[in-house]
Image (cartoon, rainbow, N blue to C red):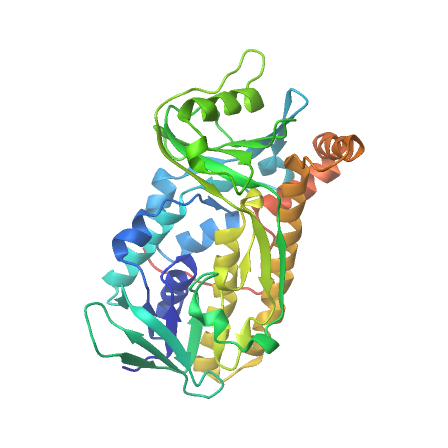
Length: 401
């Protein structure tokens, strides 16, 4: 089969890229190793920057997000038994964030692509990339319930298949420039059937470890506590989890609400960047090129930024023959990626308890929090990074809704 852009991966990056290309009259085919039910049912957090919200709305896939998402104008930082609000809306000239789960974004994008007649192949196996240095790269794959391999012949390949996908591995190891940091702590996340306990996210630095109070819906809440990433979830009973949450976030006159825990898991935390985001006619986007710790809420937003640059570059190539933006794809994306990595690293190290630190280092951490919550300049820096830094390129996506 033949298409202009072969996309590997039906996560936010791949689906949004296909959607943006469609609006520019560019054809694509998406290959995904999981089922539609799995990608739409895998629960992932989602804090959307103002720019991501604006993009989804401008391209016609934001209606349900605007109806069901939770708009937050600020966040709260808690330490030393006190809570301090960062008013992002005021500090950034009216910008805000929207809490809307990643799998809900995926549902909206899948529906939009299928309604437009897009070709999405779910449950494919043995995806491999060939001739990526040529002008006619090929993606080979085994379709669902098939015994014979098929090929996608295309002009470009977009590797949107996450950290463990085949796209990045198709770049020769000696040519991949990769940088990584592994953090000494993980997050134990829960979904709980309780009412919402706070109108905005609470980030708590506590001597027992970090905690985050978030939300998913009026009836379902998402909370996290810092744990050893090597710990076994079997060691964490519901009672133990609630006990730790109470210890880390309760204050005089305010307490988190207990309830049935319907999901719990432990995830490790890393920062990762593959600076080789283009090789031949293969472009990496989203988690295939970078991973951020969740503290800064940048993962999905970075993916959206990547594919905006890539979609505009491809549009210029197909409509005017101009290749400058495609040639600068890595350079443009990496500037934003490293700023997001800096912010995510800063938030992570400021808020988590590193038990290898001395009392001096712990007090420096608390002083940093005190400064951020008492200095308008410092609070503004946090706010403008949290709601999203401006895009380096201008995109003008708009459709009639």
